[in-house]
Length: 443
Image (cartoon, rainbow, N blue to C red; front, side, top):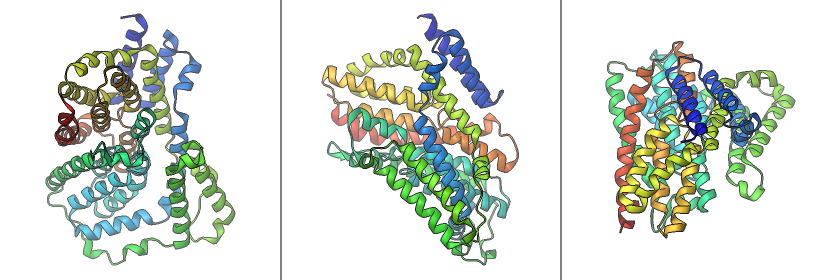
């Protein structure tokens, strides 16, 4: 192996170890890794900047701005009160139901945004009834990251699959005469959430929420209905515009930025007509989680260094001979090797690289690539729930949970939640995936 691939791998591993263990601030660890890669010649400083997917960054910034107004609308408190009433005081049911709802919403909205949307719902209940917020908000992050691949609009991996293979919206529901991503992931999702309901029953044993003491109706939490209508309306229109992006021809980040700017300008001009105190531009920008943005930018560039040095391509070349020999063995290897890799590697770059490998493999050998496409996509999504390096949604959830509880969570406590979640979801997805998508196509 040449010097650059070895050097890039070492720098990356050191950076990821620092990110996962928390010995050094995550942003500093990732940025330090980028500086070292530039210094040793993996790529230039300009290349490091270009590797970052700035379209994604602008999507995050814009939707986060809109979410800031959404948080003031009273809708999160309305959802919290509604779920509290349905839970009848059962903390495990409340936490599980909020998580499940977050997962299904993430089929259409970016998972990081979903965490930001639902975190206030969790915090409202935790403050009122006095139980820690970290585990519930992390569960929301895990659920939000789970279902993003179920449909075309929810996350980057399905959009990358669309780019490589040409699959359209309905292909994620039914493809090649059989149920595809939505059904397979829904089965695994329901099983995983069901298991965690019993885990939460044990965790919150003896804790009850006095729902009867809540006199107000859920709708009473929306104190300024016009404000809520405007905020939710702009949010919905922005998401719809992003969903129908092909008709407009603009990048998603550009569309999202229009929604954010419109909302800021609208309340700058007409904010005095609402009873809810609307923030000025400085306050809106100050509320953004710039630390998370910095980490996401750095992570793109850090993983890009592996791509630039040819490390990811070398890994995929080791998998190709196995796939060519046996579809069942190859799919199994692809699934169970990818899952732990994306647990420590930001999964988007890894998935995109392997999608092209599978496409070329299908062209060269005549093999049906769809079993491999799906196994990669599902393993890449579910496995990424292991650490904050694999899923930025977990990074945001961890930050929010620690800030709410005013403490630093240990790696052991973090993995004590994420590792069981990943194992259960991978097993419950692997079985129907093999039965429906691999074995029928195996020779």
